[in-house]
Length: 359
Image (tube, rainbow, N blue to C red):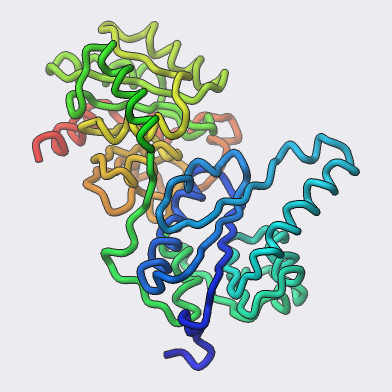
């Protein structure tokens, strides 16, 4: 036991904050499940951006999900202040004993001071100022080599207070829910598909520089369907993502089932859960596939698979041997196209898919 470890038996309520994108929030889900496994009596709340709340909704380890609406900034100073005050009032009413802040967002330091839980945990970011450090009772170091999966980085907050997660406790959790499963079942029926009878391809990302070329995706789909597989393609209801799928549709020789722009996040999870295989790039849908235990073929370019790869699921990760990757840049030279990703051959992706299908 650490000298300054936290006895969870003396804790009642915990607030976990993760103010990032959808995939980041999902990768924080093991923090909730590990805490609940070690201290079932805990009430564990989450504070996330409102548009990412679906990633934790229905999670049995999460008591309540509080959301910060990014649109508050557009309401004007007075309306934004009222919304912020109402959120703070709700959080204060919960009387938290422990705060786990899992990003470098300054809101975490403010909450540590305004909510005043007995224990306040955050990372010791290299550029953190004295004010940040003084806001928390427990600070944990970040790895110097950067080669640590984000799931483990999140769990380091628990290790810092003396809790050691078991290997089998670290899985991601995403709950599609009965309604989403019924709706996806209906959609699959209309497409003449059954659970486990298709490959789910999600070629898009909110970041263009993470996308594989449309021509290669179309060729992959043709080859898969030429082998007798059925392919279902999805994308978010975003203009750029829908445009990418449109180009894939024009280039593909064989028609494929297309549900792009038609699914909620929960329905996307249900679709992935029912698939025999998921193929996609580094994106939230790839992490959802890991969470619902669908085997994953993941294509990586400028982002690092050491940090963001599929988690605890049968997988094949494809990445080039470019010496400059992972660079995290917005495409080579900022041109939105990542050579390390665009040059990945169709044959390699097809081989990876076949190796997982033959397991």
